[in-house]
Length: 321
Image (tube, rainbow, N blue to C red):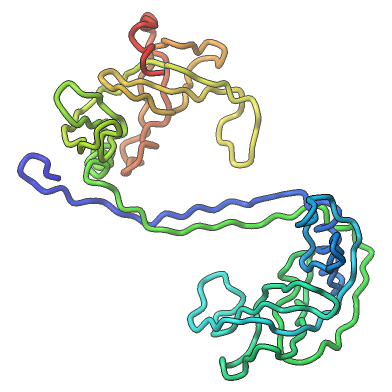
């Protein structure tokens, strides 16, 4: 894509998504995690008599709830393995190791876990291994630090702590996002206080933010259009529920704003009035953050506020809901 006679240099940046996923574990998985904290491993007996480790909550054959817990050994047999020559961040070791499917004594299924050996020459299907327990255990699969060659000599470490009922798992995703040429123009425009939309042909719909192609005909949206920072509320919701990290005290409004000259609304905050006063058709304008805080992001606009103009007629936005 070119802008004027100049080729557009696309923008790219590393992105990082982080959040904690919290769930209640139920009686079966809770017993399994509580057992790990005590250096014990539990499976559950299925309808066909097999002992399943790790224990599922429901029978894989009948889908009925499972209840018959069975304690198995902390030693077992390697059924399959793969060598990890270059560990990734967050894996159990920062040096080469193996992943292995291990059938614990007393179990009929295999457990996937890390196996600590120095080289693949020490690995073989059928080798005997045992759990190496973490020094500090909290009721997670990481309470087994890894498996290692040999038989288990560990004993249970019974605790008076309450059973494990909740599990919080950190989730992380790191990736590099490369913007399309149209998106790159849009992002550079935001850094200059401009709102840039795009359309594919004369008289066509104006998309904001711009898309690389018109979704109805596949044509590139190379016709870039600078839009004003005023618009109309099409639909909205009042946020009443507080959550972790919330920067605005409820109630407040998240609304779809249709910028003047655009054909697709986008989501943003409406402040500057009571939440109960926000309505469909309300005319709003952008409130920009201080210039020194601007970057290549729509967050340069802190929020939208009412302009005080008369509401837009329903006919002017009815096809953009």
